Length: 214
Image (cartoon, rainbow, N blue to C red; front, top):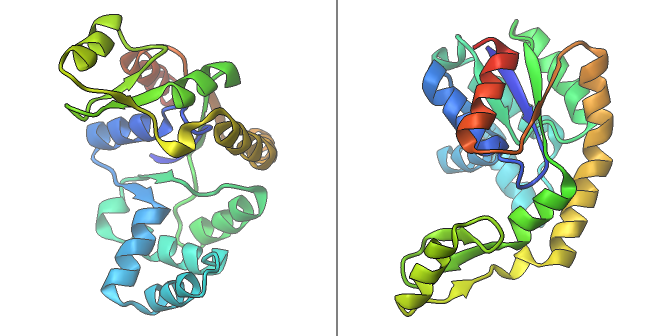
């Protein structure tokens, strides 16, 4: 099972990827984690990535793809993998296909978790952390009893600085601009599996399992 998850910020793709990984004992391959590990290990690609980051530059796709290639050739990825955070655009998707073909591990599916943008805005701008318990809550979706419990305990519902409507709106616009061509690419290749991302975590996961026949 070789999967790419697609979905806007707040769609829950990370949560679903982790559940799929746990059930099928396959690695969730996060490009962010891989970069940090490569830098810490001092590998050749890690040194190149560190130099780019130290210069305030984005790590180039060829470095990221090289790190992905190395990771997917490890034994624990033989039975499959879940790619998280890559590809983000059409150029990266095309380059990734070449890498996967070269190691004999092409994608089986690209799973798009589709959530209405109005719901995404509420999920992201409504996020709060209780200053006493550290519990993550949402002013739109959490039960009133949980919100009140934080306040009664003397806590405050704290919003992250970047969870404001303007910042979130910009993130979603960038996602839409980059990802819509990517979605069409995977649809044309016969790999796209689209599921409704609204509902409980369990409900969405059952839809993931259904489309993957997992």
